[in-house]
Length: 132
Image (cartoon, rainbow, N blue to C red; front, side):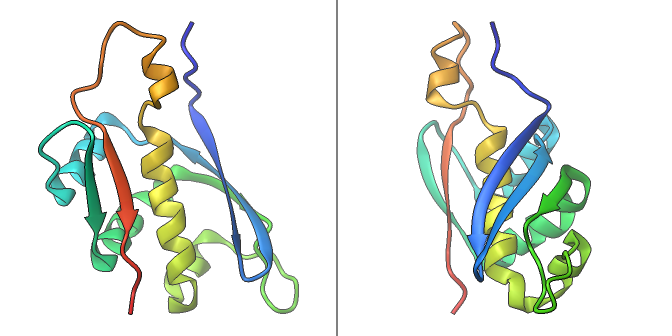
């Protein structure tokens, strides 16, 4: 039986808030687009994305893939929305974290691969470079 779910949960912390982001997995075309951006050429290749690549990916894919974000509040304890987070440089690290989370949660894990005779053609370990 497949472990596939249409949405995945990414949990992270930022600025004292514990954040939960429910996201739709990337489509095959979305995964291919980011794989091309990263220049991935083989299985189990480790890649490092430049901050500008991560933000470009986030801008193009997060709005249509983030179903909900909870736990993130402003200084007045008002809930923050994704569109506001995406516009403010203050949240650069959080946006990067969510984008990388979408990439990681969209691909098949080694445990899930063990449930199938078919193997994906590429598997990558994505690492985000920190902005200076």
